[in-house]
Image (cartoon, rainbow, N blue to C red; front, side):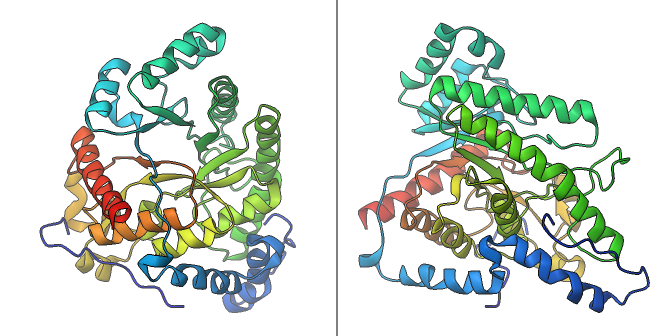
Length: 395
Protein backbone atom coordinates (compact mmCIF):
# COMPACT_ATOMS: atom_id res chain seq x y z
CA UNK A 1 0.00 0.00 0.00
CA UNK A 2 1.59 3.32 -1.02
CA UNK A 3 2.41 5.90 1.63
CA UNK A 4 2.35 9.67 1.23
CA UNK A 5 3.72 12.47 3.38
CA UNK A 6 0.95 14.34 5.15
CA UNK A 7 1.58 18.03 4.74
CA UNK A 8 0.39 20.70 7.17
CA UNK A 9 -3.28 21.46 6.64
CA UNK A 10 -3.32 24.99 8.02
CA UNK A 11 -1.75 28.19 6.87
CA UNK A 12 0.64 30.10 9.09
CA UNK A 13 2.75 27.17 10.27
CA UNK A 14 6.48 27.13 9.86
CA UNK A 15 6.66 25.69 6.83
CA UNK A 16 20.64 -9.40 12.37
CA UNK A 17 20.48 -11.32 15.00
CA UNK A 18 19.91 -14.83 13.64
CA UNK A 19 20.96 -13.84 10.11
CA UNK A 20 23.72 -15.41 8.10
CA UNK A 21 26.91 -13.35 8.06
CA UNK A 22 27.26 -11.44 4.83
CA UNK A 23 30.75 -12.54 3.84
CA UNK A 24 30.35 -11.17 0.35
CA UNK A 25 33.05 -9.84 -1.89
CA UNK A 26 33.43 -6.07 -1.64
CA UNK A 27 33.02 -5.90 -5.42
CA UNK A 28 29.59 -7.51 -5.40
CA UNK A 29 26.85 -5.66 -7.23
CA UNK A 30 24.62 -3.71 -4.84
CA UNK A 31 21.37 -5.22 -6.14
CA UNK A 32 22.79 -8.74 -5.95
CA UNK A 33 23.92 -8.09 -2.38
CA UNK A 34 20.57 -6.71 -1.25
CA UNK A 35 18.76 -9.59 -2.89
CA UNK A 36 21.03 -12.05 -1.06
CA UNK A 37 20.79 -10.49 2.41
CA UNK A 38 17.61 -8.41 2.55
CA UNK A 39 15.30 -11.38 3.05
CA UNK A 40 17.15 -12.46 6.17
CA UNK A 41 16.75 -9.05 7.80
CA UNK A 42 13.09 -8.88 6.85
CA UNK A 43 12.33 -12.35 8.15
CA UNK A 44 14.12 -11.59 11.41
CA UNK A 45 12.20 -8.36 11.79
CA UNK A 46 8.73 -9.81 12.19
CA UNK A 47 7.67 -12.57 14.59
CA UNK A 48 7.40 -15.93 12.93
CA UNK A 49 9.44 -14.80 9.94
CA UNK A 50 6.45 -13.08 8.34
CA UNK A 51 7.44 -10.55 5.72
CA UNK A 52 6.53 -6.96 6.57
CA UNK A 53 4.36 -6.58 3.46
CA UNK A 54 2.28 -9.54 4.59
CA UNK A 55 2.17 -8.31 8.18
CA UNK A 56 1.02 -4.85 7.14
CA UNK A 57 -1.53 -6.39 4.79
CA UNK A 58 -2.91 -8.23 7.78
CA UNK A 59 -3.00 -5.05 9.86
CA UNK A 60 -4.67 -2.82 7.29
CA UNK A 61 -8.20 -4.22 7.63
CA UNK A 62 -8.13 -3.53 11.38
CA UNK A 63 -7.74 0.20 10.77
CA UNK A 64 -10.27 0.21 7.97
CA UNK A 65 -12.90 -1.47 10.15
CA UNK A 66 -13.04 1.62 12.35
CA UNK A 67 -14.90 3.51 9.64
CA UNK A 68 -18.18 4.42 11.30
CA UNK A 69 -18.89 6.06 14.67
CA UNK A 70 -21.01 3.08 15.75
CA UNK A 71 -18.02 0.73 15.44
CA UNK A 72 -15.63 2.93 17.37
CA UNK A 73 -14.54 2.53 20.97
CA UNK A 74 -14.85 5.39 23.44
CA UNK A 75 -12.50 5.47 26.40
CA UNK A 76 -11.24 8.33 28.54
CA UNK A 77 -7.48 7.93 28.00
CA UNK A 78 -5.62 10.11 30.55
CA UNK A 79 -3.63 13.05 29.17
CA UNK A 80 -0.31 13.76 30.85
CA UNK A 81 3.07 15.37 30.34
CA UNK A 82 6.75 14.38 30.37
CA UNK A 83 8.49 16.38 33.11
CA UNK A 84 11.82 17.55 31.53
CA UNK A 85 9.95 20.44 29.91
CA UNK A 86 9.60 21.87 33.45
CA UNK A 87 13.25 21.48 34.43
CA UNK A 88 13.47 25.13 35.53
CA UNK A 89 10.86 24.54 38.20
CA UNK A 90 10.88 22.68 41.50
CA UNK A 91 8.69 19.62 41.97
CA UNK A 92 6.00 21.60 43.78
CA UNK A 93 6.05 24.42 41.21
CA UNK A 94 5.77 21.91 38.38
CA UNK A 95 2.85 20.12 40.01
CA UNK A 96 0.98 23.40 40.39
CA UNK A 97 1.40 24.12 36.68
CA UNK A 98 0.39 20.63 35.61
CA UNK A 99 -2.62 20.68 37.91
CA UNK A 100 -3.69 24.08 36.55
CA UNK A 101 -3.75 22.61 33.03
CA UNK A 102 -6.11 19.88 34.17
CA UNK A 103 -3.67 17.12 33.24
CA UNK A 104 -4.21 13.75 34.85
CA UNK A 105 -0.90 11.92 34.68
CA UNK A 106 2.86 12.34 34.40
CA UNK A 107 5.89 10.66 32.92
CA UNK A 108 8.87 11.30 35.20
CA UNK A 109 12.56 11.28 34.25
CA UNK A 110 14.68 8.94 36.39
CA UNK A 111 18.02 9.06 34.61
CA UNK A 112 19.76 9.14 31.24
CA UNK A 113 18.97 12.05 28.95
CA UNK A 114 15.81 13.19 30.83
CA UNK A 115 17.78 13.50 34.06
CA UNK A 116 16.34 13.25 37.58
CA UNK A 117 15.42 16.86 38.28
CA UNK A 118 12.07 16.06 39.90
CA UNK A 119 12.88 12.58 41.17
CA UNK A 120 15.74 11.97 43.64
CA UNK A 121 16.02 8.30 42.71
CA UNK A 122 18.69 7.30 45.22
CA UNK A 123 16.86 8.94 48.12
CA UNK A 124 13.58 7.28 47.21
CA UNK A 125 15.24 3.88 46.95
CA UNK A 126 17.03 4.34 50.27
CA UNK A 127 13.97 5.41 52.25
CA UNK A 128 10.48 3.92 51.61
CA UNK A 129 8.89 6.72 53.62
CA UNK A 130 10.42 9.35 51.33
CA UNK A 131 9.20 7.42 48.31
CA UNK A 132 5.67 7.35 49.71
CA UNK A 133 5.75 11.07 50.52
CA UNK A 134 7.08 11.91 47.04
CA UNK A 135 4.31 9.92 45.36
CA UNK A 136 1.68 11.47 47.62
CA UNK A 137 2.51 14.94 46.29
CA UNK A 138 1.16 13.79 42.91
CA UNK A 139 -1.80 11.90 44.33
CA UNK A 140 -2.92 14.89 46.39
CA UNK A 141 -3.37 16.82 43.13
CA UNK A 142 -5.12 13.99 41.32
CA UNK A 143 -2.06 13.28 39.15
CA UNK A 144 -1.00 9.70 38.47
CA UNK A 145 2.70 8.84 38.09
CA UNK A 146 2.16 6.55 35.12
CA UNK A 147 5.66 5.94 33.76
CA UNK A 148 9.32 6.35 34.69
CA UNK A 149 11.71 7.29 31.89
CA UNK A 150 15.44 6.66 31.70
CA UNK A 151 16.21 7.24 28.01
CA UNK A 152 19.90 6.47 27.52
CA UNK A 153 22.36 4.34 25.58
CA UNK A 154 23.21 1.26 27.68
CA UNK A 155 25.14 -0.31 24.78
CA UNK A 156 27.29 2.75 24.05
CA UNK A 157 30.84 1.78 22.98
CA UNK A 158 32.23 3.96 25.77
CA UNK A 159 32.09 1.53 28.70
CA UNK A 160 31.59 4.27 31.30
CA UNK A 161 28.71 5.78 29.35
CA UNK A 162 27.10 2.37 28.86
CA UNK A 163 27.53 1.41 32.52
CA UNK A 164 26.02 4.70 33.69
CA UNK A 165 22.92 4.29 31.54
CA UNK A 166 22.57 0.59 32.38
CA UNK A 167 22.66 1.50 36.08
CA UNK A 168 20.00 4.18 35.50
CA UNK A 169 17.79 1.48 34.01
CA UNK A 170 18.39 -0.86 36.96
CA UNK A 171 17.55 1.85 39.48
CA UNK A 172 14.47 2.82 37.51
CA UNK A 173 13.26 -0.78 37.62
CA UNK A 174 13.76 -0.89 41.39
CA UNK A 175 11.96 2.43 41.85
CA UNK A 176 9.09 1.29 39.62
CA UNK A 177 8.77 -1.80 41.79
CA UNK A 178 8.62 0.34 44.94
CA UNK A 179 6.11 2.84 43.52
CA UNK A 180 3.94 0.30 41.73
CA UNK A 181 4.64 1.88 38.33
CA UNK A 182 4.07 -0.62 35.52
CA UNK A 183 5.83 1.01 32.54
CA UNK A 184 9.45 2.09 31.99
CA UNK A 185 10.32 4.20 28.95
CA UNK A 186 13.70 4.35 27.24
CA UNK A 187 15.83 3.94 24.14
CA UNK A 188 17.19 0.70 22.71
CA UNK A 189 20.67 2.20 22.48
CA UNK A 190 23.23 2.01 19.69
CA UNK A 191 26.69 0.37 19.81
CA UNK A 192 29.69 1.08 17.68
CA UNK A 193 30.08 -0.76 14.41
CA UNK A 194 33.03 -2.80 15.67
CA UNK A 195 34.57 -3.71 19.02
CA UNK A 196 37.19 -0.96 18.61
CA UNK A 197 34.80 1.93 17.88
CA UNK A 198 34.67 4.84 20.31
CA UNK A 199 31.30 6.28 19.18
CA UNK A 200 27.93 4.76 18.21
CA UNK A 201 27.32 3.86 14.58
CA UNK A 202 23.69 4.06 13.44
CA UNK A 203 23.35 1.76 10.44
CA UNK A 204 20.12 1.77 8.46
CA UNK A 205 21.35 0.72 5.02
CA UNK A 206 22.97 -2.67 4.47
CA UNK A 207 25.30 -1.87 1.58
CA UNK A 208 28.26 -1.80 0.92
CA UNK A 209 28.74 -5.25 2.54
CA UNK A 210 30.76 -4.06 5.54
CA UNK A 211 27.71 -2.19 6.82
CA UNK A 212 25.63 -5.38 6.88
CA UNK A 213 28.45 -7.12 8.75
CA UNK A 214 28.61 -4.31 11.30
CA UNK A 215 24.85 -4.26 11.76
CA UNK A 216 24.74 -8.02 12.33
CA UNK A 217 27.58 -7.71 14.84
CA UNK A 218 25.78 -4.94 16.72
CA UNK A 219 22.64 -6.99 17.22
CA UNK A 220 24.27 -10.33 17.95
CA UNK A 221 27.11 -9.18 20.20
CA UNK A 222 25.74 -6.07 21.92
CA UNK A 223 22.05 -5.26 21.58
CA UNK A 224 20.39 -8.63 22.12
CA UNK A 225 22.69 -9.80 24.96
CA UNK A 226 22.16 -6.55 26.88
CA UNK A 227 18.38 -6.54 26.52
CA UNK A 228 18.06 -10.21 27.42
CA UNK A 229 19.72 -9.45 30.76
CA UNK A 230 17.84 -6.17 31.22
CA UNK A 231 14.42 -7.71 30.61
CA UNK A 232 15.27 -10.61 32.93
CA UNK A 233 16.12 -8.13 35.69
CA UNK A 234 12.91 -6.18 35.05
CA UNK A 235 10.82 -9.36 35.07
CA UNK A 236 12.31 -10.43 38.40
CA UNK A 237 11.20 -7.11 39.89
CA UNK A 238 7.67 -7.12 38.54
CA UNK A 239 8.18 -4.81 35.57
CA UNK A 240 6.80 -6.35 32.38
CA UNK A 241 6.45 -3.33 30.11
CA UNK A 242 9.57 -1.68 28.71
CA UNK A 243 8.43 0.96 26.21
CA UNK A 244 11.25 1.68 23.76
CA UNK A 245 10.98 4.89 21.80
CA UNK A 246 11.43 4.31 18.08
CA UNK A 247 14.02 7.03 17.60
CA UNK A 248 16.72 7.85 15.02
CA UNK A 249 20.33 7.13 16.03
CA UNK A 250 19.24 4.03 17.98
CA UNK A 251 18.88 0.49 16.68
CA UNK A 252 15.12 0.50 17.33
CA UNK A 253 13.84 3.37 15.20
CA UNK A 254 10.68 2.04 13.51
CA UNK A 255 8.05 -0.71 14.00
CA UNK A 256 10.11 -3.23 12.08
CA UNK A 257 13.20 -2.92 14.29
CA UNK A 258 11.01 -2.90 17.41
CA UNK A 259 9.51 -6.23 16.35
CA UNK A 260 12.97 -7.59 15.65
CA UNK A 261 14.17 -6.87 19.18
CA UNK A 262 10.98 -8.17 20.79
CA UNK A 263 11.20 -11.41 18.82
CA UNK A 264 14.80 -11.90 19.97
CA UNK A 265 14.39 -10.82 23.60
CA UNK A 266 10.85 -11.26 24.87
CA UNK A 267 7.42 -9.79 25.37
CA UNK A 268 8.63 -7.21 27.91
CA UNK A 269 9.77 -5.16 24.91
CA UNK A 270 7.10 -2.87 23.49
CA UNK A 271 6.71 0.58 21.98
CA UNK A 272 6.76 4.11 23.20
CA UNK A 273 4.82 5.24 20.16
CA UNK A 274 6.19 8.72 19.50
CA UNK A 275 4.66 9.63 16.15
CA UNK A 276 6.94 12.65 15.71
CA UNK A 277 9.74 10.27 14.71
CA UNK A 278 7.51 8.21 12.45
CA UNK A 279 5.87 11.03 10.49
CA UNK A 280 9.12 11.96 8.74
CA UNK A 281 9.83 8.30 7.94
CA UNK A 282 6.60 8.22 5.92
CA UNK A 283 4.56 6.13 8.35
CA UNK A 284 0.79 6.45 8.52
CA UNK A 285 0.10 7.16 12.21
CA UNK A 286 -3.24 5.37 12.43
CA UNK A 287 -1.86 2.39 10.51
CA UNK A 288 1.09 2.12 12.91
CA UNK A 289 -1.13 2.33 15.99
CA UNK A 290 -3.43 -0.40 14.69
CA UNK A 291 -0.55 -2.56 13.46
CA UNK A 292 1.32 -2.51 16.78
CA UNK A 293 -1.77 -2.15 18.93
CA UNK A 294 -3.57 -5.24 17.71
CA UNK A 295 -0.51 -7.21 18.87
CA UNK A 296 -0.59 -5.50 22.27
CA UNK A 297 2.79 -3.83 21.70
CA UNK A 298 2.07 -0.19 22.57
CA UNK A 299 3.01 0.44 26.20
CA UNK A 300 3.34 4.23 26.12
CA UNK A 301 2.62 7.15 23.77
CA UNK A 302 4.41 10.47 23.42
CA UNK A 303 2.29 13.29 22.04
CA UNK A 304 4.51 15.38 19.78
CA UNK A 305 4.01 16.65 16.25
CA UNK A 306 6.25 17.16 13.21
CA UNK A 307 5.80 19.85 10.58
CA UNK A 308 7.10 19.49 7.01
CA UNK A 309 8.26 22.29 4.73
CA UNK A 310 7.31 20.96 1.29
CA UNK A 311 9.68 23.13 -0.76
CA UNK A 312 12.68 21.94 1.26
CA UNK A 313 11.51 18.33 1.32
CA UNK A 314 11.35 18.50 -2.47
CA UNK A 315 14.92 19.80 -2.68
CA UNK A 316 16.66 18.06 0.22
CA UNK A 317 14.57 15.05 1.23
CA UNK A 318 13.48 14.17 4.76
CA UNK A 319 16.91 13.50 6.29
CA UNK A 320 17.26 17.22 6.94
CA UNK A 321 15.89 17.93 10.41
CA UNK A 322 16.02 21.21 12.34
CA UNK A 323 16.25 21.58 16.12
CA UNK A 324 16.68 25.36 16.37
CA UNK A 325 14.78 28.29 14.90
CA UNK A 326 17.97 29.48 13.18
CA UNK A 327 17.95 26.33 11.04
CA UNK A 328 14.32 26.46 9.92
CA UNK A 329 14.97 28.31 6.66
CA UNK A 330 16.72 25.29 5.15
CA UNK A 331 14.98 22.55 7.12
CA UNK A 332 12.72 19.88 5.68
CA UNK A 333 10.93 19.35 8.99
CA UNK A 334 11.04 20.06 12.71
CA UNK A 335 9.19 19.06 15.86
CA UNK A 336 6.07 21.03 16.80
CA UNK A 337 3.49 20.97 19.55
CA UNK A 338 0.47 18.76 18.86
CA UNK A 339 -1.72 20.43 16.24
CA UNK A 340 1.02 22.63 14.79
CA UNK A 341 2.33 20.09 12.30
CA UNK A 342 -0.83 18.18 11.46
CA UNK A 343 -4.44 19.24 11.85
CA UNK A 344 -6.63 18.64 14.87
CA UNK A 345 -8.66 16.23 12.74
CA UNK A 346 -5.58 14.07 12.21
CA UNK A 347 -4.89 14.06 15.95
CA UNK A 348 -8.52 13.16 16.58
CA UNK A 349 -7.96 10.11 14.37
CA UNK A 350 -4.83 9.29 16.37
CA UNK A 351 -6.62 9.49 19.72
CA UNK A 352 -9.48 7.43 18.30
CA UNK A 353 -7.00 4.81 17.12
CA UNK A 354 -5.58 4.50 20.64
CA UNK A 355 -9.11 3.99 21.92
CA UNK A 356 -9.79 1.39 19.22
CA UNK A 357 -6.88 -0.81 20.28
CA UNK A 358 -7.74 -0.66 23.98
CA UNK A 359 -4.56 1.25 24.82
CA UNK A 360 -4.04 1.20 28.59
CA UNK A 361 -1.40 3.93 28.96
CA UNK A 362 -1.46 7.72 28.91
CA UNK A 363 -1.12 10.35 26.20
CA UNK A 364 2.13 11.94 27.39
CA UNK A 365 2.86 15.41 25.99
CA UNK A 366 6.54 15.86 25.15
CA UNK A 367 7.34 19.36 23.98
CA UNK A 368 10.46 19.93 21.86
CA UNK A 369 8.96 22.67 19.71
CA UNK A 370 11.67 25.25 18.84
CA UNK A 371 8.99 27.93 18.31
CA UNK A 372 6.48 27.25 21.10
CA UNK A 373 9.05 26.33 23.69
CA UNK A 374 8.63 25.08 27.23
CA UNK A 375 5.32 25.25 29.02
CA UNK A 376 3.71 27.25 26.20
CA UNK A 377 3.94 24.27 23.86
CA UNK A 378 2.57 21.99 26.58
CA UNK A 379 -0.42 24.28 27.07
CA UNK A 380 -1.18 24.36 23.33
CA UNK A 381 -0.83 20.58 22.97
CA UNK A 382 -3.03 19.96 26.01
CA UNK A 383 -5.72 22.22 24.54
CA UNK A 384 -5.81 20.24 21.28
CA UNK A 385 -5.74 16.83 22.93
CA UNK A 386 -8.41 17.62 25.52
CA UNK A 387 -10.69 19.00 22.84
CA UNK A 388 -10.37 16.10 20.41
CA UNK A 389 -10.81 13.62 23.25
CA UNK A 390 -13.95 15.46 24.34
CA UNK A 391 -15.32 15.42 20.77
CA UNK A 392 -14.85 11.66 20.59
CA UNK A 393 -16.33 10.93 24.01
CA UNK A 394 -19.34 13.19 23.49
CA UNK A 395 -19.84 12.43 19.81
